[in-house]
Amino acid sequence: MGAVHRYLTQLVRDSHLAEDLTAQTFERAFVNWGQFNPDKGSVLTWLITIGRHIALDHLRSDARRRGRESHVAAQTPMAVEPPEISTMSPQMVTALGHLSDVEREVVALRVLLDVDGATAAALIGITPTACSTHLHRAMTKLRKDLGRES
Amino acid sequence: MSRDDITPKRLDELMDGDCPTSQAERDMMQLAADLRAGAPQPSDALRSRIASLGEPVGDTRRIRRPRRFALAPVLGGAVIVLAGAGILFNSLNSSQSTSPSAGRDAATSTVESSDPFQTKVAPTAADNARETAPTAAPDRSSIVPNATAGASSPGPSRWNVPSSAGTSLIDDLRAAARRHGTKIAVAVLDAASTQIDIALPRTGTDALIADITDTLRAHDATATTGPIQIASDQATLQIMLTMTTRTP
Image 1 (cartoon, rainbow over the protein chains, first blue to last red):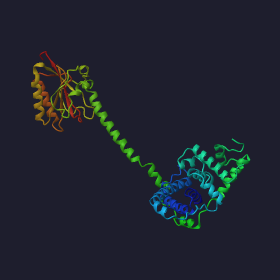
Image 2 (image 1 turned 135 degrees about the horizontal axis):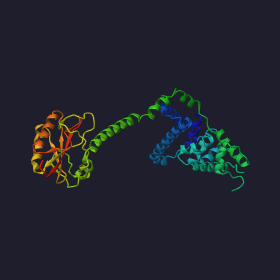
Image 3 (image 1 turned 180 degrees about the vertical axis):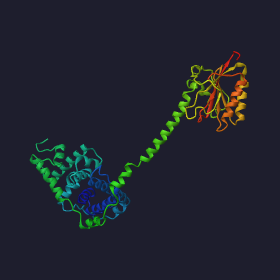
Image 4 (image 1 turned 90 degrees about the vertical axis):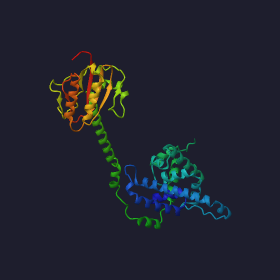
């Protein structure tokens, strides 16, 4: 559960939304438990796949909703709350915010969840080489933003 | 590339558990550790919400098995259908392979139609295969219905017919067939050869064959392959007429 939650938190950059999506992920997984095939991968990989689909569906529908409400938002400026990334330092949150979506997803899978490169690439839908490149670029950006360059 | 740069491949190795060997690598691993340490933990509300889901629905093994073998009945049915088609094709092929007309398929294909029991005039293609057909039938009475029951269909019955018989023989054969509730298909293969296919009725085959034989003999035709023989499962009787100029 924790791994799925960590992954979804990085994906949507909203801890509350990530909790809802995590719950939805497990609800769908419990209902579709019969479709899980251990020959194709681990339970974590299967859960991440479900969670990713749910999150992307949510983000797409949210984008459409935002598009419909864009003119209202333009007329009525609202205070935008910073994304909640839990216990991370503000510098870390800012640095993660500078990453692209795919870089942040790669960091979530490879660093936070310790998913191997091939599996992470398959989950995201990119090649293992691209996954390595994104990870390297993301970590380099984070080191630079956090002032940890040697 | 500076001395503390880490290649993507090396970074992958570090993330997969390799030990850092330089200060840059140690810094990178420290950054990864900080990221993990700062990662959010699921709240108690989320834990209780997921815990309330209970046990997963269904069993992966029990449900996966029928998915894996879902196509088995379909494939089995397809195999049965193909086997049946193969047997049918083999049966038809074997009955045709014993016929001298097998080597004449190309020549006669142009006269086949949806109603084969109509008089047709085939091209005057040579029928050499007919001349070399086996003539192994025993020399006994020409009326031996169902003599080879259960075996493959015997070959066509060959008859030498005086050319003077002409179309009257065909008309008489057609009339004989009509009397027994069936009809004939006539294919003139060349100037001297005519193939006659008689659809065999389900009953009264003996009488039909006797009538056909009497009709042929009435026109001074002589059997060169012995008596007419048919198998119990035979649907068509094939008679090959060869016009001769000699007087019987």
